[in-house]
Length: 327
Image: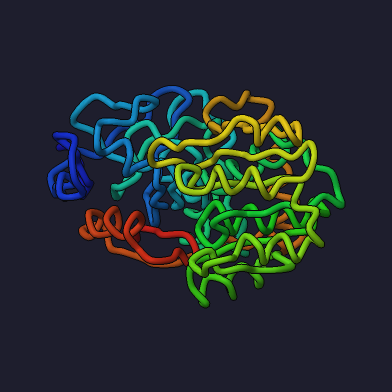
């Protein structure tokens, strides 16, 4: 008799309400090269809300589907040809085959990593997309150098906190923005030298003053449809804006890039090569061993509140750590 589990299923694209909890979903079986994980926590990422609407051209899954890529949990069983994991191993993932908003999920072995005992499962669910995206933006795309100034624009969410920690470890001068006092404290506690409230009028002038009018070398941008034009004015000569997040279109003056020979660079994690994934992971494990890579968990929701989580991650006034679903 098949084993059953609870899982979120999406049978039509639309608002958060299309996320339905089902209690009679069959537990998947791992095939060759796959790992079955009993999920203890799953990270909630903004991209999953875009995918849910059906209007995100880059990712449009076949219906029905279960969202979720960043899980942490315990290996239940492994398929043929998997030698690197065994039942009982604590793990986290960067992608899943069957979806992470569920009590069990399947992942290919190359997307599964051992979770150090120093991190709990909620922290493990906060590693995947946030840290790998932040590293891709800073290292693979911006090619940052120690001593450069970086502005993390929206630094209190999952990717933002990861970017602050990584940037500090890479020897950068780190400036971060957040929308609340709580968020600003979080930013300062996770590697930023300076924090600014992006809801306060004139905050961009404060950033320029803090750099003696020179501006920053790199901006990691979480909301480019709102901030991109202002970003271009805060760059130094040769500066780079890394577009990590966007919820719509924006108008800029291309002359703003000409004057400083600046660059606008898109970041898409799933364009990374196998070698780039391995490089990123090696840096993160060094950070976990060294104690400076510390995923910060924010709001936690039970699985049956996934729809509320999707609403809050977009509508909340200010992020404060990584949002996770708990099982």
